[in-house]
Structure formats: structure tokens, C-alpha cells
Length: 236
Image (cartoon, rainbow, N blue to C red; front, side):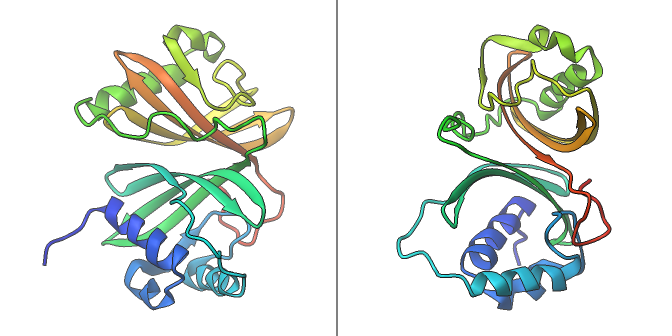
């Protein structure tokens, strides 16, 4: 049987399990020891199923909505997904990160930020990955940016740099930052970071588009880390 990629497995989970709420596929695609980092969802496959059962009790959309998936970046066992979600009258930009093991979802992190009337550009922009760009070079450029003086971010930005989150720009950096994970595919790079702003800890998820050795485009979400979560795994 022909194997499918981790990116395709994640897309199947979104379309069949999350969108269609087909719980018969959970055993096929979700590991029993699934590790959950989303702060409001309980740990394990059981915690995920509890959330899905709750979703089944909610009114179903009366119209077919466009796919919330905007960008998807995969490297090795990791897949990052940029979403534009409309749910119960609210809109948010979400970035999910999955770790896969043996063709199944094994671990999940996420962060989200509400999209207001003035934030309509938070998820738009370039969608297609330029596969002709070497992902290793893209990752190296972003890594160098984090390794240097972030107050001089403009050194790493292209002349026509596009910022999609005006509330959290690359020139408005937190007091301190720690990178947890960095993955790249072609010209797109995802960074999962932990930052401190005014004494509060935030999950900072960034997507960069690299072009000719510079950061050309940037999307992000930031979410304060709550003191109490539905599990003991933390957000990172």
C-alpha cells in the first residue's frame, strides 16, 4: 500500500475528524498516548475525544464554509498549520503544531489570537510554498535572526517586507524570548517560541517567508500562558 505523507495525514484529520466529526477514524490516526499541550483540552486520546463529543453537540453550520487552512508547513515528524477560524460568532488566527509518529498524531501544541475589525490582514498574503528554495537556507536565515540582536530586526528584513500582525511585529519584540522548535519547508519557516512581556509569559508562534536571503513576510499569533491548564504538560 502506498504510504502518505505526514502533511496528508494531518489534512485528513482536519477534514474527517475535526470538520466532519467522524470519530470512527480516531483510532486510526490518533495515538492512545497522544500528548496534549493546548491549555483547555485534556490530555491523551480520551481528552481529544471528549472535546470532539462536545463539538458534536453544537449546532452544525447551515452553509458550507471555506476551508480554514491557510498554510501548512511540514518537516520530518512535524507539521505546522496556519488557520483562520470562525467559530460561534468569533474569528481567530490559530497555528497548530503536530508531531507524528508511525503515521499517527502523537503530540499537539497550539496558540491563537483573536482577529478584530482592524486585523483583517492577519492570515492573508502568500500561500503557496516555493519548493525551489532550500529549506535549510530558509531555516538558517531565521535562526540567525533569533541568534542576534532582535532590536535590530530591520537588518534581516527585505525592503518590501510585509507584516501581518501589527500588534506583534518583528520590531516590537518581547523582553526575553526562547525558541522551542523551528521547522522549514521551501521558503516558509515556522518558529515556536516562549516570550516574556511585562512579566507575563506568552506562547509566540511565528511564520516567516524568506526571499533572497531576507525575511520578506511575517505572520504570527501570541497567547498568554494561563496559570491553570486542563493537563500538566504545559504549552511547550
